[in-house]
Length: 384
Image (cartoon, rainbow, N blue to C red):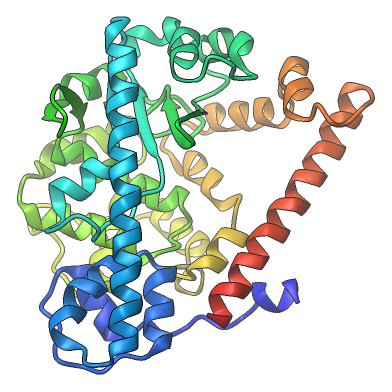
């Protein structure tokens, strides 16, 4: 059964969902359960409900979408609370963070609460406070199992993010914005371009400006394996907002060596959504673009739930495609392949035996469990 789920054909996405992702007015078309299922798989049920309220007469479909929207809005309210609580805990200790993606993205670029689903909180630690990584983790989750390891691993660049839990919601604390394995060279420049964003309960949190947010979303779409139309929708809305400085976006991507993959991603997204490519931005071309086209060929993109099950290691190739950073990429791959014994001991604590045995058995077990979980989700999504 798992193999059948993995190899199922790609559903042809309805024009309605493409229009919703692009932020275009959609015509008065009919929808069925298949459309709702695909919208859910691609993170667009909120946008579909915005449209369906005035364009759908099927009571059962409208009820399902309305109930789902209420659930999403309730969850988003909890995410906002956790974001504010997390920022408050850290700021009281003088630790500075910015929030990336998440609920602030929905508030900044979407028309109403509920249109952009979000499951967790993503925080970026100030590059000048990496030495306080362990303290930040302790403030968020005092009993975190990695607490004794976070400090040295973050300072050495061995980890670029760590997941904590606050009030049963995941809070990912990032030590590197792009999280490509290779370090972001312009981290301090990124921090200098952040903006203050007022929080609903008072106070503020820093956010990326439109230019850096766009580059981050483009990179993240590669890391997310082009799974869902929601990622395309985010990019379309930031572009349409008109606040992107294309020259600065180019300069930043070029400085990280990721100009080819970043702007080829933009080209693919805008082409899929039938939107024009920016006139002031050169089209990406060259050997790296051709390699990118092979890695992320059309048949791999927009596979929804299935995209979480397959192609999981392709995101690592973004670093290899970076200009003049191949040695850094290979070095990171090697370190990632052979993590420190202390990390292996905690990550695979249920496995007994020497380092190599724990590493191999632990990875095999984790991969098997992950694939089984995702295969079950894919099967349920297909049958719903």
